[in-house]
Length: 518
Image 1 (cartoon, rainbow, N blue to C red):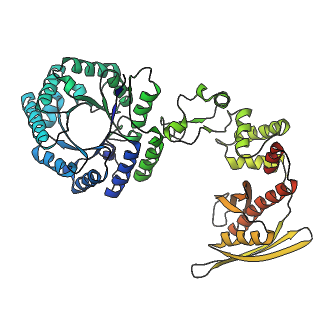
Image 2: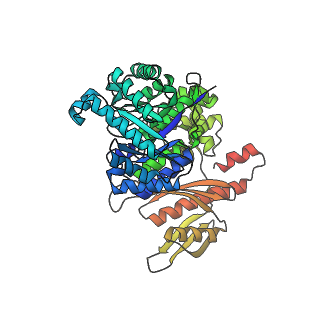
């Protein structure tokens, strides 16, 4: 029977200690709510003795979050322990997490205490914490550099004093996976009453091994992993929650265990943390990076199109990402290009695909990445041409913070000259409404993007719009030094496509899809 692996999230404590990652009380609450949706087992909400703000945030989280254990960190000092209990006592499942360093280097240079003194401090602290709270975790700071016989002695003593969880931290990211696994395995086998506690690990990433060390410890018998969203934390960061969880889930053949984490909330959690801290993950970050499910190589793209398992060991949907991303660049092939055009609504025949691919490769040699707008330009300017049913003759718009925005449009349709006006929430909306009135076709603006083609105050604005007419989307583009003029022309470009499609009115589904792309 598989064992449950408990996920102890310390994003709001150790993670927040990252430079530039400080959060307000409301931001911490917002993140805690997301961690509850993620269904982590333990939320270490802060270090209450460190500041009044940290105390208040831990207390607020303890009062609101109901489904997770809420922990607060403290040194093996009575006033620290009291402060934690004062904050976490409101939780459905409170935990006091106390720690002291056990390595000789920390004892000599930081604590300036003997092994006997540290052992006494640990036992006294755990015993006192247990008198307040039924769930007490003890951490032997810098355990990976602690002499084994002494570490066994300390762990045995804190279990006897009432600890329910014993944490073995690789505080400075010093351990190597097989070494760390052996340390955890030896502890579990040598410590008396080891079955009375949950063994936990807390690994830092100074050598880039935090996730590997955490997983090695799980394989050796640890049943709680302390980690952070996006792997944030002091120095090189902590073990990454998303990496640990998805490794356990993906490699069930190796790890005889499971977590209760709702993996579909991993990506939303990552995005929220990035938005709150302003610290964004690197593009090639495992699981949540921009490129984690992106493929540019033509060979990879062809494989993914045929069967996703060829190059994806997990689905993007399993971590809350909508779909894989076929990134188009100079290494991409015809299959990926054809699929991208299908997604944009353009069904290309073989001859059109050949021509589009040649134009695409020429463009890809000049640009690092090809965007949807580039592909649309290739079709509209190089492959197909949409008849210009309506032509813009005149546009005038007025707006200001004290008046209602209005716009007047004059269009030409063959020999006819058509004119109308409209109001709107700004000159762009007023202009588009005026076009709707003139043409008699009402469109819904789905997307509106402006790019500056050149620099300076007289820069040329390139406008891209995606407009929905009935149940179909059409894309329009135009450029001008006047933003209203460019917007009007881009919107009219989409209108002309809609008019052309309606006039073509193909009968077959396949022909209908191809016509909609014009």
